[in-house]
Image (cartoon, rainbow, N blue to C red):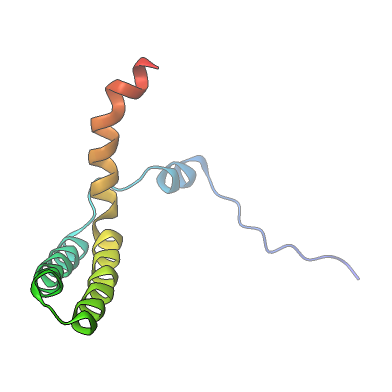
Length: 93
């Protein structure tokens, strides 16, 4: 029984398009990250001000989840800023 290959051969132009990242993150990710950050602010303030440990624990957990979503949306921006900030220090090493 002969082997069948379902390989896809890409041209150099296709490979270059795959390797090069996009210039921006897009408006949808920017809006999603803004909404997630806006949702994290009141959660943090409730967990910081309340005296009830159960309320503080619940809002802190949900705040952590919302901040993880914000990092997921805005991760490329944060990575780009960190890379530009650390570039002089790391290039000197």
